[in-house]
Image (tube, rainbow over all chains, first blue to last red):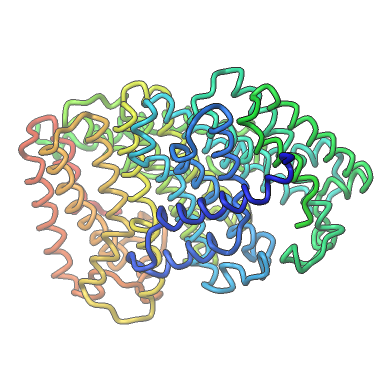
Length: 300
Length: 300
């Protein structure tokens, strides 16, 4: 069986595992005040592919760690991703009514609750790093490193910084270097942190962490270029949003600046780089390699 | 010299100390992308009284710890407080143009950047708990406890939950129990966490932490009742916002529900309770007692 053909069953099992853990680690809807906990869960369970937490778990296992130990930190990345989508969809930002085919948070709960649901998910992500089970396996220094990785990937020098660059680049002509810098911040930084945190929790040595980092940087950029390509070429039903919406908004995208053939070639070569980076980690890293292969083949 | 008369010089020195540490621990405005770092600093340095970080430092010292060791965690509370003001002031929330007499973040930077500046400050607050200096003095278990305290005080079961209750209570008649529950979440939870984190970092035993907790709960509620009283009676110049603005918005306030004399009496008795709670901690707790005395005497 090739690694690529093992991937669908692997992803399905991991999505189930992550979904069950999310349900366990989010406050129940009955917790006071119920509205906020309902809004948090509405967006978390709106049908994400759980790519980021799956990467954290796979990175931990690739360096000989256990998925169970990495689970709380893996979930933190999914909560950060979800909060960023809620805030991104707000009228003051992208003003989107639909996300994965469902009404966005502010369409269901109103803008004020949507802002607060995002804030609460961001806060809860960091609470998960305070999970007693995780802390019992990490000393203070390693827990602090994990905290810094998550915060730097998510914050003003990472994902939030990328949103700022994105806003400032709208309706302006930008070059390829700017588009790559935008992607490196907006989606790359969090994916990089998700993989590195898996490595740190899994006990990676410096060489393995370096391999994981190169893997994650290539994968993150490939992932975003393919996202841009799907936005141009994609089928709205499987995307859950209308194709061509980036172009209408004059978003700075890789295919928009470099053209479709160059974008496809770049995504392919990044996928090859990502797979090569984790080759030295051997058989335990097969899901990482399969994911890098899958990312450029996906259709939604 | 009485403790009350020592307080102004103490507060001034502590505010200077906290301001210098904030300047050191926030990314410089030149960090890419500059706009977000400028917006973060704009709101942090818009003239706060630094009550929350001062409480963290004072609680650490009250149980025999060092203020220096508690500084990164103290700053985290100021960043959380600042982010909550930015998001609170947004058009979708309280829609305020002025805060402490200055234009609010979204008036200066626009709504999108204001939302992101709040997100970035919230994220950076948790990054401060990953400060290597702090981690070197706390084992994984204690660092995890600090993380949970901050997240619970700031998140959906704390401050963010309180904002939700506040939004849902607007334009409705609420009883005194609801107003107290609102305050306990919206402002009380973060103040309680600020004091408890100081205690944990300072090495408090269970008895001392319990004393600090009772102090913080009484102080937090007194603080908010006085805030409500100042909003009714206050001088707009020293408040930095218009007096009576809560009443115009039909906000649920303590004086609004219980009347002015009962509100004044309740604030006074809570201040007495707070001072009594930390009496067993002795001379090292004098700033906490003086703060509890000051809170009900303040005019802005």
